Amino acid sequence: MMQFERLTVGPLDVNCYIVWDDETKEALIIDPGAEPDRILDTVRRLGVKVEMIVNTHGHIDHIGANKEVKEALGCPLLMHEDDIFLIDDECGVHVAQLIGASDSPKPDKTISDGEELRLGDTVLEVIHTPGHTPGGICLLCDGHLFTGDTLFAGGLGRTDLPGGSYEQLLNSIRTRLLTLPDETVVLPGHAYGPPKSTIGNEKATNPFLS
Ligand SMILES: [Zn+2]
Ligand SMILES: [Zn+2]
View 1 (cartoon, rainbow, N blue to C red):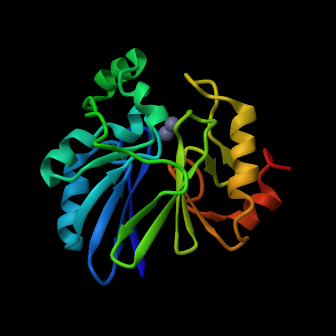
View 2 (view 1 turned 135 degrees about the vertical axis):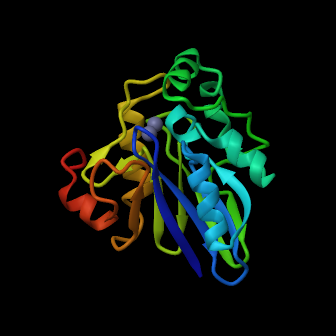
């Protein structure tokens, strides 16, 4: 069965998730955006074996501790191909310096829609949801959906940054996320609002989706 722990990291309150299989203790880390020491301490406390780092997208607040965490754990970094340009983005590099984040290494492997990431018997499915960024993804596992900056409880990701598209974002959410069962738990990529929601609740109450 899938287990997870959420850590809110960095000045922009990014939700980093450590996800693991409770039988094999194999784990992955979603969006190590900042505070690598805290993330690594949590990995040690949980006693899990991290097999990979996965970025929901390439914005600096979600990738700012990729370098330290990857070096400490020696695991591969995965990201959708369409967001690799953001690693080299001049604006991102500038913001990285301002907030003390590290330049991320390039991914060791790209991931695409429909791919399955395996931790023992626990499987996370990649759902490509462009709109906030071209290569944004959500991860679906055991009725839980890690949404990055695509969907928040009561909100949507912004679309005014490089490669963003409001039309595309709405289309991704409507055709790929709202089609999931209503009870699917939504776990967003920032701690701005409530820490979780459900697809049914977002369908009924999210003002951007009515
Ligand atoms: Zn973002
Ligand atoms: Zn973000």
